[in-house]
Amino acid sequence: MDLEQFRLLLEPAGQEALAAASILAPQEKDFLADLQGLEKLFPRETARAALAIAILRREAEAKFPPEIARRLYMTRSAMEQATSWQVAAYRSSRFSGFQSVLDLGCSIGGDSIHLARQGHVTGVDLDELRLAMAIANFRALDLRASFLRADLTEPLPFSPHPGQAIFFDPARRTGHRRAFSIGDYQPPLEIVSGWLTSWPSMGVKISPGVDLEELSGMDCELEFISENGDLKEAVLWFGDLQTIERRATVLPGPHTLVEDASLEQKGPAPPEAYLVEPDPAVIRAGLVTTLGARLGARQLDLTIAYLTCSHSIETPFARFWPVEDWLPFNLKKLRAYCRSRNIGRVTVKKRGSPITPEQLITALRLKGDEERVLVLTRFDDRPIVIVCGLPLRV
Image (tube, rainbow, N blue to C red):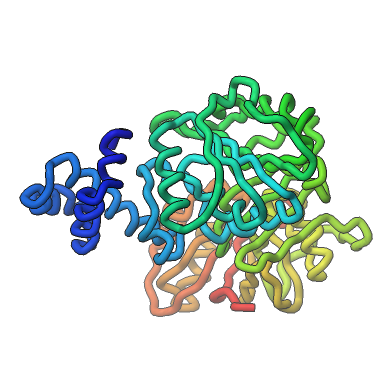
């Protein structure tokens, strides 16, 4: 879809085509069949654009509330790269107290929607189609914002004023290729150093898989955010938005964990009654030992992000797996162990082991009616396997 086709979609005839396409509850796999039907009622390009938006709106319900998704305009790449509703809502709350926010790299306005509820927002992007969609999305949701087309690699066309902050979401994909280095972002992340002289309060969305070495020397807070157990993103917070060096935030909640030097951290211990699996945000933030100290749990190995303890505790930062047994890793002994206990189905988890779950399951040649979880890991730098039941919901 190009800009001209999108503008036609906003006209009364285009809206009629979009309504007709939405009634079909279309899916990508049925695109050609649905398009043939719509072409009988509307011009081909209008029918194609309407059907594309109707399909994306259905798919967007995985990220946005249905009542919001059904009113949004988007491209496929913009929808796939958009922040989930819950994460964007949480992140925007950190801008509370600022009179206005510049949303640099605003795309279709997914983050701008939430930022606009904190104060006035100005969305900036180079892509004309995405900007037009952002404007249409704000109108559809009866929200107000300013939008401007600008090249972020050029000096920003704004004069800073007190009470203003920046949220920057650089592109981390070029076509179908994902950028892993912050130097390959568009624009490269180094551009923020120039902005900070005029706008010291800034939040920058980056990949949660970022190489931490690339961030060395940056004076900022690094926050990792997970949603329902999945690591979603990382954010750099500068200036007044910075509160700590590292933070792990778990959604829904929000629940946040930061380093606490006052907590006593103990050395490794063998598996006890429970295996504790920290949330991925906790792991990426380097707060496994902090969590262990809070829970009264200890690491199995100083290099492994598993903890163990004798009790279960209600916490949003970890899952507890009841430990039935553990033994040094030996394939023949593990096979005999499973057979003696009628274990025929296993889920294999691993950390610190070169063996893949598929390799182990094939090699065990299991037969039986019982089901267990096998955890391949290390204790005191030695390979072990821990036999667990299903995780506790605490």
